[in-house]
Length: 354
Image 1 (cartoon, rainbow, N blue to C red):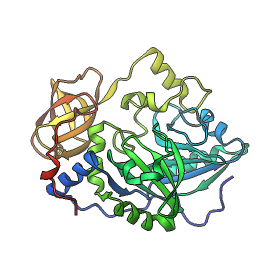
Image 2 (spheres, rainbow, N blue to C red; image 1 turned 45 degrees about the vertical axis):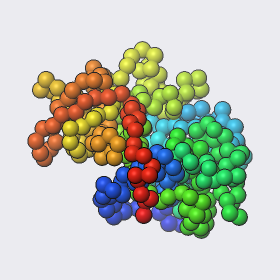
Image 3 (tube, rainbow, N blue to C red; image 1 turned 30 degrees about the horizontal axis):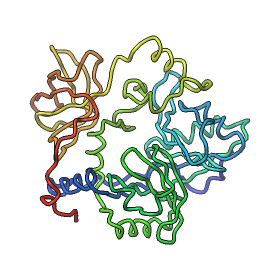
Image 4 (spheres, rainbow, N blue to C red; image 1 turned 120 degrees about the horizontal axis):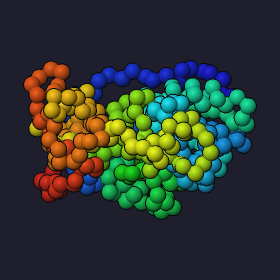
């Protein structure tokens, strides 16, 4: 059963379009994220908790990962699928002593909440809303742990490891990510913790800059590369998100059959673009459509780059034509992911952000 509804916590909140980030700001922020430590307030991310004696076994039967195998202090990446094996939502699952804490994109929160609540009947498990109750601050960059100092001493090195710590007299939970450390805290402490991180040397950066780093690393994102028309194997998350040794879960048959007996018709690739194009731009080769751009960004190091779902015969090194809905055709070179790291400008040439 769920908490008594008080207000529509899980409903996505419309936000105003972000102002465009100028080239100089983007370059400075990108340097911080790849050489130092940037911080972003991502408290709008979806957050839920599951408690009860059967919380782990229940969730194991719903998502792709083996939640029952998790020990407190560890976590996993997972996906909730349709019965046909398509992605409804991806999420992080953190195992605590008395609860499972779930973090997902805000755009996937309602679907995740509705699915879990609908299937909880008969299980000793309760679903709780945490989106408004917890702040989430993301530290990204190689100096993330150094910014946290002693607070991060007990934090494991594996992605999704997490630990309760104290930061400037306030209790926080630190979570290891692929690019740094997430800091969870009560919502009322969010502003103070953000100020503390900045005081320790973290630099606040715009989300646009973090999006560039995500594309460079080749990590798919819900609403961009992933939706209910895409399978885990197509975007390369099987190794991270899927267990083939646990029991049944929604969409298992299709995922297992594709893994053991076939291969996906599409896969996620990078594109080095001749010029910027919008998401949704069609890729063509020999006059036929072979894919679409899912995310397009302007990297200060690589120039215009993109992620695209393309047909499986398209390989790194291939040249493709892009046809934007508005504008003249352009070209791109297909590359493997992640993008090969190119040398950025020396630190002394990049002034501080802000």
